[in-house]
Image (cartoon, rainbow, N blue to C red; front, side):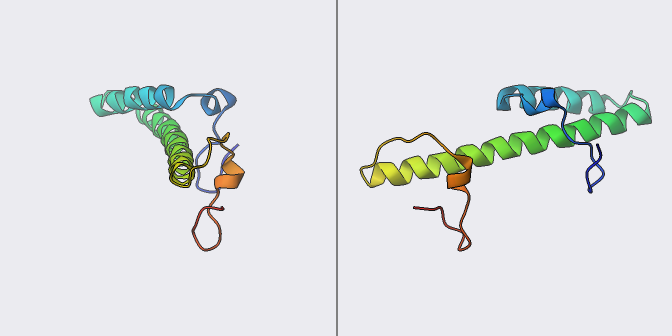
Length: 99
């Protein structure tokens, strides 16, 4: 299914990739595209997949950044480690993490 920005939604396999797996696949795509030997259709298909992989990597990095912020704040306050919840870590309207 195509999204409003023209890219395809990630398939289930892509959505299950770890950060390291997605980054490695993205590096492979970039190397293949930089060779300049692909037909235009294959180049565009790889570019679309690369944008999905990049979005996956960025999303995972953002979640980890929020998790580290929570851990740092709770550690500074003498708190304990809690299981990360993306919903709880979402920025509030004022741009701060919930307490």
